[in-house]
Image (cartoon, rainbow, N blue to C red; front, top):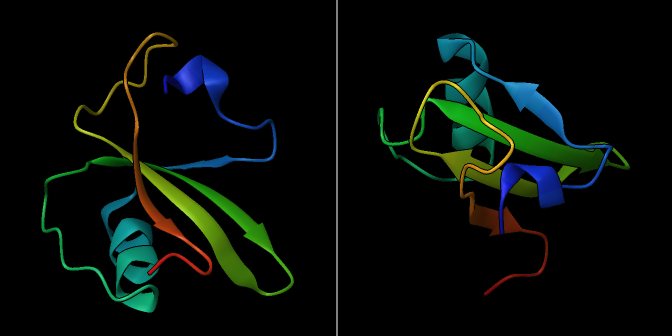
Length: 72
């Protein structure tokens, strides 16, 4: 999957404090592995979180699904 394939509702998060808050709330400790996150929220929770290993999210940049509600 690439940035251009993400849903329109996905929110870009790059601020270090915001990233840390998202990752802590879903129980992931990734340090600085993903300086850019995209988050899809719904009903007061994070539904899906994707990470990018670079700070500049080019449209063709690959993304990694880090979290999905109900994912084991």
